Image (tube, rainbow, N blue to C red; front, side, top):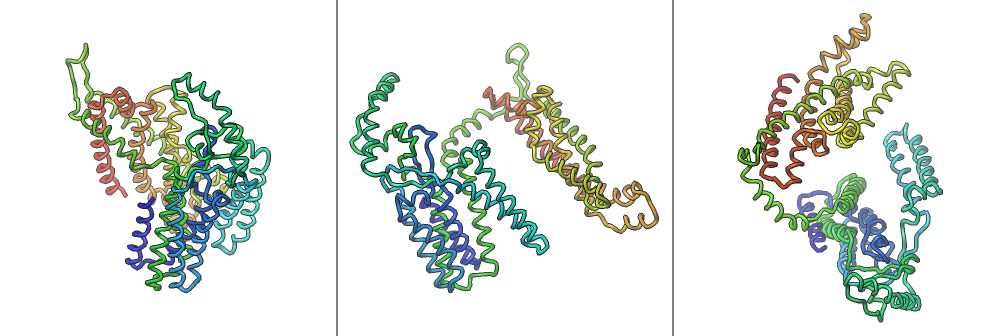
Length: 543
């Protein structure tokens, strides 16, 4: 937590010393704090079982701890600093940052408390509809001609999204959206004592269960704070009561401390050097905040942790120790011996062939489809524009389904082996190559096309003599590039049973034969480099 604050502070100061805009950083930190206050989880709130655990935001915790609302004021101070005289705005932002750092930094020192989470009906639905309306409206805001149509479309889409989420069908399909945002309210002393009595009354049943599995019996509790080491009664948990545990912090704490550091450093530098501002600071600050606020939950959802990496480091060392030296062959093993290098060579050849056939089939179908997906060739009439839209739609749909997913489907359909990998790779390559080919066609020089059309040449002759000579080298270059990608992809496809070197790696990894698996890794490195240099040389000669 302190590391996040110091990192943000140092980053802001270094950026200021490099003469970058400090007002932009202040705005970014202010916007970030506002969003984090309302949307990011801070504490753990536990109920009867683990699935009852929720993580309220600072907004949700403010009713039980009103001083947390000062974080909201700090975010407003950061944004307001952009409109005030720069020295005053910087000082105000720095003051808000210090206040935020103290409140959030000491939050884990607060005692656990009982609270009741009250849902705010309709808030999630309103915010979802509003967000959709804003995004669609923003897409057309830069054009005066499109501004009004996109505004109408945005309002319509937002209203439909709200109506659907608020309906019975929406609640059935997205049950978590109903009452997603909750406020933690204080619990009267009489109710706390009632829950405590209910807990003590259920101890006989709980201890009987614990005795059967060899656990020590629990003692009766004398205060509600002692529930911190236990669990709430099931009835109280169903009524929305939770134990708020500030020491069990969520990623919102780290984000708030990082933003406080940035706000402090940016505000201080702006007060010291008020000339550090630029035009477009508001838009730039909002963009910075959007990037940070998108990355923070992504890091949390992926459980990114250097501590886990450090904990797994001994396994990596053990892996390297068992993988080296490689076991190239052992003729004396068993009846027939083992020959990993020979198997790797055979499987590597299959992997190359999967990539080769998949790329060839993909290019074979992508070439004609690319002409139908080229905007400059399909705008002659309504029918051709419809064909263009359908072809581009197919490309987008195909590219949206990953090759690995296609491989899993085809493995189930045609069985294990390289054929499933070829089918998956070919289908996905059609869309990727088709998009690249069509964009190359759209960028051709119009001069030769207009010259042939002026003398009455047919459409096929225009394509043959004016378009193909321009795009053929590009097509070859894109195809070679796609072959490089497909080779790497085909390695992964083997892990799901689509044949090739990936299947060999999975087999040796699961059996713990790292000294054989390392041979495959070395072979992949060598072949990847050979393909890369060969492909680069060919592209330099062709394109």
